[in-house]
Every structure is written in C-alpha cells, then in structure tokens.
Length: 246
Image 1: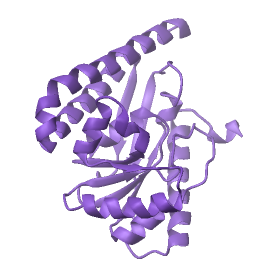
Image 2: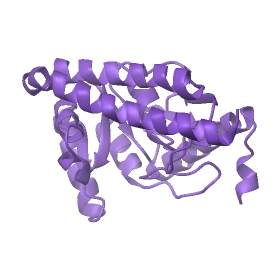
Image 3: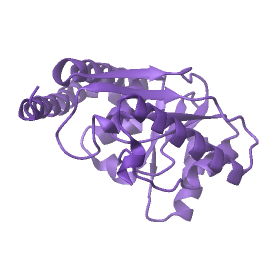
C-alpha cells in the first residue's frame, strides 16, 4: 500500500473517531450527567469501537498482554499516544486517569472525565500539585477503580528518553496499593503527533505488580527499568529498534 493511500485512510480514520466521540458523547450525555455507570458505558463503547475501527480502517491491530488488573491498584504506564489510553481503558474494569487540569475544560471529554473520577493535576506547581494529587486520589478511592498514571508525565516518542517523575512513587507510597507497570509499543504505529497511522501490531503489556513497601528511590528505579526494558522489547518485536533513535 502506498504511503499516500495510507495517509488518506489515516485522515479518514482520525475524522471518524473524533466525530464518533462527539456523537456518542452527546447521545449519552443525559445518562452520564446523572450516572457514573452511564459515563463508563459510553467510554467503554468508544474505546472498543476505536480499537475495531483502527484495525478495519488503517490495519492497526491492538492487543493487551499480561494479567489485567481488576482490583484497587496503581497502573504506571508508558505513554506514547492516544491509542495506549484506549487499550488500557478497554481492558480494565474502571480506569481513572491522572490528567492535565486543562482537559477538564475540553468539551465532552471534561464532563466524562469528571464522571469517571479522573484526577486533574496542575503540572505547573510541582510539589503543591503532587500533594493535592495524593489528597484527591485518596478521596476518589472511596469507590473501586484502577488509577492510571504516566510516570514520565507526557507522551514520549519511541526511542526517546524522559525522566520518571516522583509523583508516581508518592502515590504508590501514600496509597499503599500494588503498582502494576505497563509497557507499550503503540507509538511505532500511532505517533503522538501527526495524522499518519501505520498498519501493524500495537501492544500494551501489563507486567508483574510491585508490592507495597518498596522504598521510594528503589521503587522508581525498578519501575523505570521494568517499563523501559519491556517497552523496548515490544518495539523490537515489531521491527523497530529504539536504540537507533539516539
């Protein structure tokens, strides 16, 4: 398939999934406003349909590996693009994401994020933001769910490096829940910017939990090593050498 044709298919796919987000969000809005179950139902439908459309429209197959977390845990996930969010949300029973505060003011997304119990963070205030995040998370965990946090704080392109932030360790330490690392290779096919979506095999892999009680420094070192090693292996599996980027 020519690159031009794949780009056209990708553009059509992008328009379709964001148009579908708008339609689905509006249709479920009356239900979601009064019921967290309604918001969850709408987002589950959106995630599953996006996975199906990705395979049908651009040839991108999604897969989730490893034991899927179902209890109260912190999921520390490698973040490369929107597609890893979709795969994780579809897989776990009730994902609650640590998210940029600005997204709360995004039409449709903001309303559903609030209803799902996502935790907004002001990334500009650092220490104060981490302290408030811990307090907000503890309050939100009065209801069951899986808290998803991105230890690097943002999307990171395949092969690029970015430090792991202390916020994940603070949450792990403060909540006393197991932490499940999650690796991915989705950025090889669905980049963090641009239109082109490549055909291939996008994978999110849940790794063995890190049990409560590990010291903060040791936890961060273990978390980074496990996520980066597994993510690099997943990228090599589909023919991308992360070391070649440096």
